[in-house]
Image (cartoon, rainbow over all chains, first blue to last red; front, side):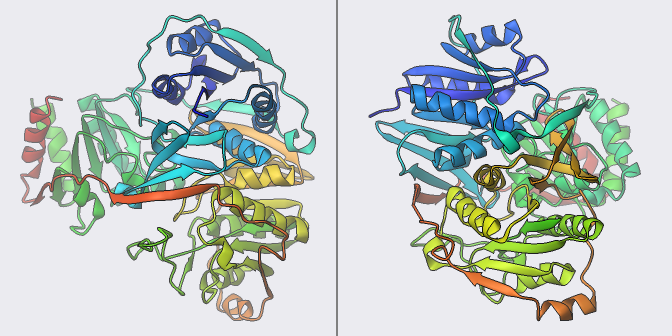
Length: 320
Length: 252
């Protein structure tokens, strides 16, 4: 038995398939076999077309109502798995994907491997690579419980490239009632205003950590980012401290970025942060602690006071 | 409300982590600490219990060691702990872990289960969702704020684009982010009291959980190393070197 059918779970975000799902569809095309998408979202016409361009020939469409859809989506997926028998199901490392994938794993009593950065299919074997210790070591893990294999992949592990002209067959699927598990309702939605370049797409990211000292002192980081046309990133520490919103967080539980240049300001480079940015082309770090792990990942490490270096950098850039 | 908080003892993140060369499992010293992210769950649990005249029990799986990490959480104010320590569970995957924890939780009974979003040492990040499915309750995940409104539990659920407000009556499982609350520091009285709080040691067999190996680690290898970079002390001119590098990278 080889991997004959791969499904990619797709969360619709603001009328678009989540970026990670397009990356996963691109990767899944290399496995050969049937490629399906399971869409959770309103189902804008453009979304189906986009999934087709990325190779999905069938889209199972789950439309959420006012409930938190994760439990019902997992139940619907379990039924689809039982009737169609996909071999491999791919999810992204996002809030909703993790919720659905985790529940599905328990419902199917099948193991799940998360944080995948590589997925290798070889005959019957599916082998997952993930990073540990902040990316210092790579672990290869194989499934031993039989299909379906469930995988959660880290964003930006694979490029997203359209490669098909298919118009997918759309199969609407009703979200089932799941009793108490489905009792949670969504009563409000707050979408953060986005200014400037997107963190995941920017050519330059200027990131700040606790070493900036206080939320007021982030102004210089914003100014530098503005001058460079860069996006502003952040460590988990300053997101948790409420200096900046979660959408700015880079790292294990935040976004993965691979810009041309990453400028780390007053951040030490915890393992959880490094996994989200270590593949940036050029890494520049400014930190007063010469022992900070970020220097081990940097092309240029400046041991110094961010509050002295950054103002000079900003002035010099303005003078150009 | 009866609150069950999932906590994990992990090797001190301040010391380098090592894998056992034969099993590839993380080496776990006798001295382990409470996963820092769990302090937020414990605090949240204590707050809910205080508001509802309830109780807080800890549930944990892994080598018990000297129980230092569990005592840290008890010292904050949790009433008791259930520790599942079973050599047969070494290297257990997330599904097995969730089976064990949910069995321990159902045996105890609960209104609210609280967990961190992922552990600092393993970070599979799906165990809470798996537990919620086994317990057949909603999972209010990635909470950056939790409030109790009578019988309703309402959270702000962090998403990639902002946050959603999600609510449900109990029973429920909540995963909390660091920052959801400010964890209290154990008092001297709390630390002394923790020494005599009940800790129930159980095995997978006690919980009637059959351990299965659904995955196998094939290999561990070092990642390709990044070439060592240039380190300079700021002598007042370091910004010029940064600008040179930005020019080389052709971004300015």
